[in-house]
Length: 215
Image (cartoon, rainbow, N blue to C red; front, side, top):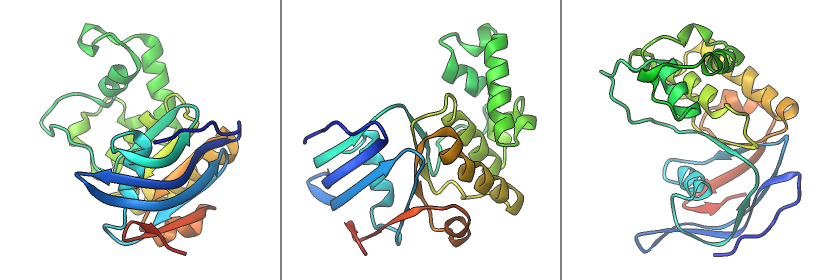
């Protein structure tokens, strides 16, 4: 396992990457380089290794070869395990993420303003005081995206973020993500099955099949 230092404009780089779990090879022979201002769309059939690649970047799976990322990291998972009966609000989630102080001891004005601005960036300010467990799938994804962008990361990982989003929300998602790279100078790795996303967001593509890069 070898890490190397990338240039300032490169936020993610891999050479001969091989990902392992329980003695099995899940992904191998992956070479990629992502610069700030670019979107890398990772596509392929179910089981091809798309989420495995993200988990390796996150450090959740062991790997061999070379893998390096620079700067801060944001992540929106495909699914989030949570208690749907919880009364915790979206603001509470931001408070837990941004402050060491438990929300039940009071939420500072600064956290409230940061949360409101983050949700406003993606057109979801009205969700601020809603219980997270009562949100629709699309609303939850919008909140998770707002959290991942607070503060703005150098590298953003999105694992099929369109799942459960309605048409209006999908339009907003395309607009937000399409503007993040050029205006916020970040790199984005986007795992997607959605043809409309690939047609709306300028990208480079990495297609995976059976754990290998497929041209």
